[in-house]
Figure (spheres, rainbow, N blue to C red):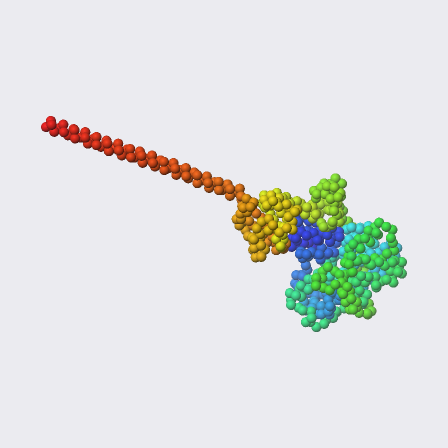
Length: 570
């Protein structure tokens, strides 16, 4: 089941998610980012940094709304970080009730259960070389997928969310609808299996909650304060803070011969786990959290929230010093969990294959490998390996693509027969192409910074600069240079430059004029021929007329002679 991915329509191929994915669980296919869930640890950092908000996360909101309309008892387990993220926590509780939730308790209650189980486990297994807390689902996934050799160190106890949900189901009935509300994205990954077993029914992030409240027109400041149905002591409420887990069990840690270590943030977790994997380090009880500064800095909070340091202060201000809750765990085994080795294996490319891929990215010699990290990978060779795995594409190499684009644009600029000029806001020359150099006898290097008027009339250019209205295909004659052009002058507002493209039509007009002259000459010749023919025709007609008249006279004379002879006979 796909829990989270990117929306293709929003993904703009910027690679920011790849750069910020510390386990490189994102591949690029057809210029679109895709999350590989079998590689992912659910930290949500890719969604936090995405500038296009292309996140697509499975939502339980519809199921929650449908259940509110049913007869089920709606119960919230509220992550203790709420007291730091919301300035007025009691009004948030009131808002949850306004949405239709009947019972609201703190997940910190589950945290206290987990802490007690940690103490018990330490007492029974103090021979373990190291112990790592299992409260953070992303830490658990990181170890399962990338450091499986550390699995024996993971404390086999459910998270506070699951512990509290189990307790709530026992308290309010198996038909009750339990919703976890908090700042974490990886809780969705953790909850998936437990939703099948019925231990928890839905996950609602603070970000989703804020959107829902806005849609319902519920404004926190307009609400009266409301209170939790049950809350934990201060040491359970400290869980979202860095060192918060250690705070409540530090005496037991020392008593069992361990030294406490708190590590937050993905890179710090990875560095520590690398050390534990390679070096002989022991007797550590490690509180590990993927989010820097702890859960208070979770990824699923409103972007308008205060910075993490103020959130920490708010939690401290909200802590209530009171005795821990008394509870009885009817079956402790349901609070145990195991972890599986789901190690991510990679097929490594050979040296020849790496070189071939590097070559396809324009990296022929070692000096070509910039290792700039723009593609999201630390080195060019690491990027080449990702291409080999199908996780990346050669085109993701930004310096290579930039160089390729510059070469192409330079080729066009250098090779086009059109005259191209670039001018600054003072109509000084920024650059000219070879065609311009040849046409106006301008040397590119010597002309830069000089006024255009030094070489040609700049009145049209000044008109475009002043009016910000382009001139397109205007016929201009530069008689001094024996040049006729179709002139297009463009104002580029973002660059504050003037670009002119002059299409040389001198030869075309010359040929056109020659054609016109040829036509005129042909017409004159034709006219002369016709006139001559007319004269000949007239002369022939005149001759024909004379001979016809003479013939007629002759015939008349013959007629008279004939008639005369006949008269004599009579």
